[in-house]
Image 1: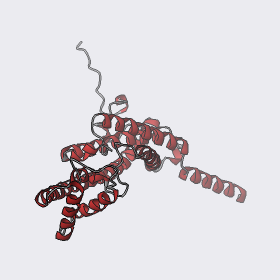
Image 2: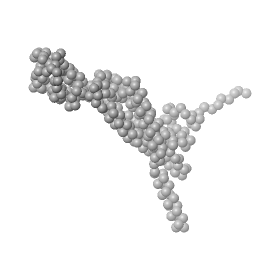
Image 3: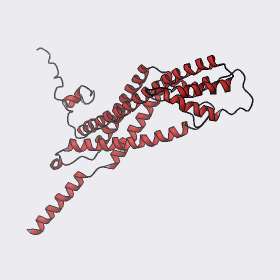
Image 4: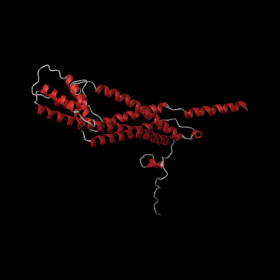
Length: 296
């Protein structure tokens, strides 16, 4: 009697361990599918001009509406890609026996979340690799000075533009210093009078402009720098919010997709809130139409 009890206890413990274990093969497949779908959709979005970032100097001139539209597209592609990955993770997972069917949907959802987390890690690694390759210095993307702010490269070019310039003139230290001064234009106090006078002196010595012309150029450059920094800051906020919202909604989509995949795996109808988005396996639902009978 004691041996039978021990055997039953061991079998129960083994079942519980299997129940609480994760099937990593469906998780890996779901994560790869989510990462591949996301990459394809982001590539299509970038082709259509819906990228959330760009190395082009004119990207900062994009309107706020385009930034918001790009963020909405990022959220949409997260819903689709993570939903597909979660569905595969739940659909391909090994089914439980009838006696182990408690909390099956929750464990399907956990597999979807695991696929979502793995897909996010893969996406971060892929983004880091692509960013590293795209950030290599070139004549078009790299600023003339490594220490000057790249967001103000055009404004600094305008500041030191001259009709005649001595050959072999090294403006790297002056451009870097002017860039750091122009960065203060976005502060509450703006560029201080001392910094403005120093910029006027630098512009006059570098370009040969008179005092009044140098002051007008400095004032216009300070105003343009403030606008450029403001646009870059707004774009960064929109991108950060869009990425956070996409990851959050992606986790929800992965959970819901895994539950839908588990129900399809077990031959069960979907939940009522899933019926509006589902167009497959309608014959398994309770609301299917009854065939019409011909009059006798």
